[in-house]
Image 1 (cartoon, rainbow, N blue to C red):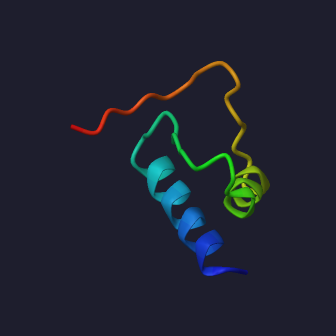
Image 2 (image 1 turned 90 degrees about the horizontal axis):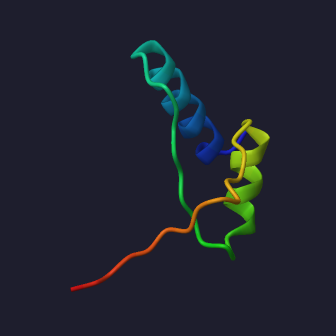
Image 3 (image 1 turned 120 degrees about the vertical axis):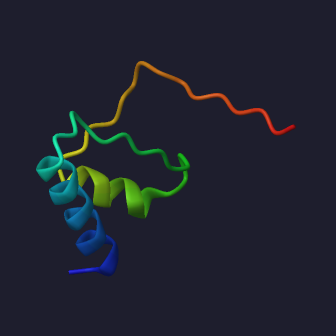
Length: 56
């Protein structure tokens, strides 16, 4: 099991134990490795929203 997977599992457990309603994650559309990790942990890709950033 990768360190990334272990860290994500700890974060999910922490969130559940502390009453979080959900976890939101963002990654580059090119980062297929982490997308596969998120999906393997049960995360679902949100196709309805775009995120915008402005560097000032």
